[in-house]
Image (cartoon, rainbow, N blue to C red):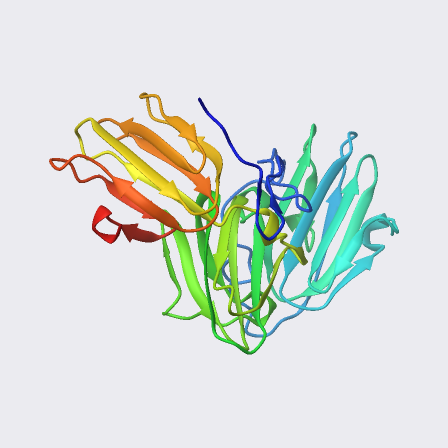
Length: 310
């Protein structure tokens, strides 16, 4: 019997939308092309001499929402006949808006770090009069601000891997670590930033510290998200497993061809060949078992875990 608990101590709750304030649907685009824009450098890297740029977003009929993050000063504009709408928001270096038959425009300095949109039709996005190639840019910018106490954190994203960025004046540190399973780092009084595609799947941090986390300038609601993502990778042989957590099993992201039984806070299942089973959960991993003659790779966010720890 599968039983997913939707609440835990501290007020966390399951939310069907993994990012309530941010559009996460992978999008159609008209302005696609080669990666990189002349004069703007690479994704996630501030320009040496930030000039003012104009971004125009031209709707094609159906309502289309969008959000993006830039390197520095960001303002609404009437360039190219665009209208200025009260419903479009500028939050520091990020913007959220919508177009249908009209056109929105913004001026900014620095790079265009990320851009995402969602709608039944495409939109045409121009940067300084040329295609902005938004389909080749990351979807979102995640910013983690420290408030004075060293606070370790880790997270996973729903598509691909996150990449360190210097958006919002963040530092890029060798001590922060990313692999295909997740990202981990720590902040004290500074800022860490990442760009990524898809949605923020889980986020965990040391509760003795304090951090402020935003996605495209808006609160990331990390308290409503699962703490961690557990991934079990088969080693070429059929491998059964069981595990338990101190909180609750929040979601089943992927199940290999073999059936799993979820009775939160415990799970029993199996992977075969090079299959993967993936779950999200709250709290700590408290028990982990699998057969003596098998050794599947198991990751909790980006951390490698073994049954010897439990």
